[in-house]
Length: 228
Image 1: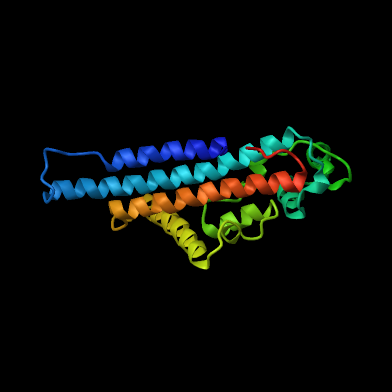
Image 2: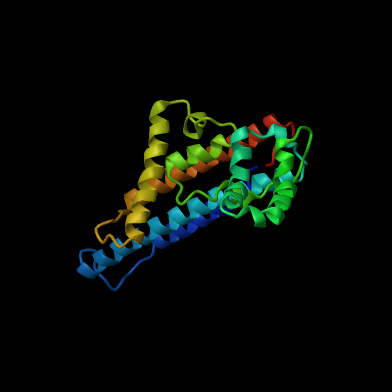
């Protein structure tokens, strides 16, 4: 069974398809107005797909952390990269605070993060900290995120063929770049319905494979039932 994050993403993809099949019977296919509408629809589909994809990554992270928090996982079972990322923001905030005003922050840090660095201790993971650094789901950012869970390269982990890995990487990179160009006002950035269908296909398959992979990794690493 897929995660709730994946189910929501695949449901949202229907919105992309619905937008692409919108018809405009009052305009002939070669009418300039029809071409403008087709162009606008394609741009809109790319922005929606990229947004839904990004939301999937955040929702997946939330779902994983919810599963771990319910199991009282010991901090020493988490990767060091994971623990460092979780502790980064409070430590950075401490570093910017005058020593005379660090007392309360140190108390808060002990409560929220000390368990991560002590043997046989458990606590609550704050999911937002793990993705606070990510501005867009570029392939390199996805690799960085899944390394927190002990997956060295998620694109390699979910594929057997280098060509498939490259197809996933280029599709994710192309989608995010195109979305950013559109969002930043690049009028020349556009996508045909063929482009959109290819992005939907590749990104959806990436999410499905990643969903299965991370569920198995978490179950094996922490000795718990698969989160989905």
